Image 1 (tube, rainbow, N blue to C red):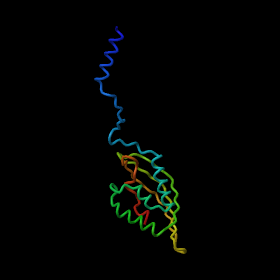
Image 2: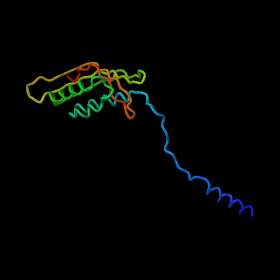
Image 3: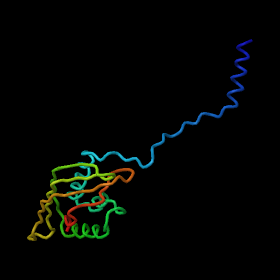
Image 4: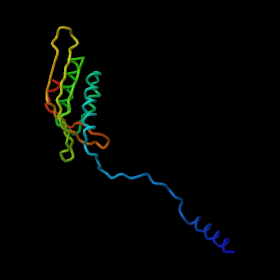
Length: 153
């Protein structure tokens, strides 16, 4: 009898309870990971790859157009640079990586060699210390500032 009563209670309770609905995991808004050496190396490697593959749009996608001061001017300089030269070789040595508030900072020695499409025209060789400032866009670290700005002129 007790078994029958328990079965009746369970049947009644199950009809009154809402069905279990699994919920998607929630993430805290505005969370950003710490900017690490691996992030800096990825960005520098993507710059190298974009230049050596002669892919200016890929290079420009590494920069945050909304947050970078004078991005339109910078973009135009990059476009002109890719029109002037068609073969690139890049080397870099990562020197320092750090967080500065919400921004990541990278210091690297950067060697850029570029050859024009016209034979006999002079090649370009720049060996400069480069500073990149990055910001988290919700998915990845993007460059919001580059110094020296004339690297691609």
